[in-house]
Length: 345
Image (cartoon, rainbow, N blue to C red; front, top):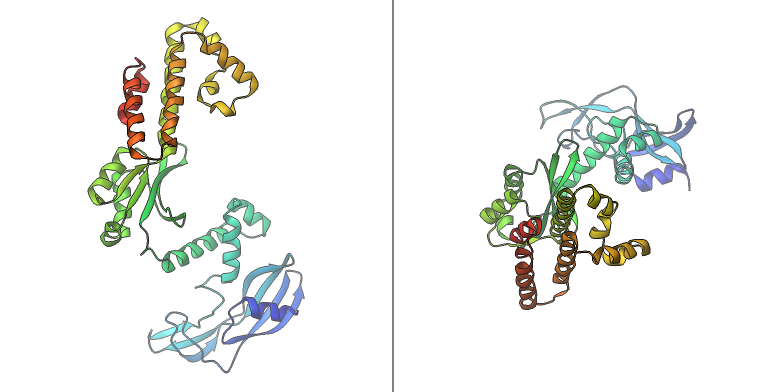
């Protein structure tokens, strides 16, 4: 298959044709010419326009072929558009706006940017970091303009740490398609309200389930703006809070009993926090020896493991009964971090 045929089958060239393909030090250069059978169109509105003159030659970078750089060479025409009322550059189907790389190349870079750092993508394909950023931005903008949010009934809300200094982003996901639908700066009430404003009151009223962590500002906004939706606290964040409570008991006990106890508990943190089936043989042996002592951390560990049974219940009745019993144990355990966790749940 000739290079001309490959380009024709993979790029939208309606109104244009590949005239020549030459090899030069920079790679393969495909010379593009306009097709006289098609009318020239305005690059701003896409309406048929009147040919005026041509601009200087431009090169548009395309997807590399067998690791050989590929370029499109074309002299864009200028047109007089009656609809826009001025002189415009013609519409080029393989490029967006004033970019110097094709739409296919934008998608190519953006796909790589999903799995590789942007700097590495730029280095790999010998282009500027800004080119990768522009490609990603154009692909994201296209996706934002053409996506359908009408059928969303279950969403997940999570915050992620953007960088050091407690700088967070609020992300909202469609739980059925497992796709990100919105992202905003900070994890505040205003951030979540901005999403609900963007999502619209009509779509918000159709939400059936919302999954989030136990961050109070989120909960308050959701109960106010989407009271009809079932609010679900996800397992990951509940377990994370439980682990923090158990570890806090360990630290308090070490501080309370002094240096001798600190030496005894050295390197034992993950023994108490790990799942029992993930412990190494050495850790299991040490856990057995520590369990023989009357330690507060051991009580916290047993409460943690007992709480795990909650996820195995299939009916509300038995799950509620188990949680009620566990709540009584935790609040009467004389372990303040576990008491606080129990009341939070």
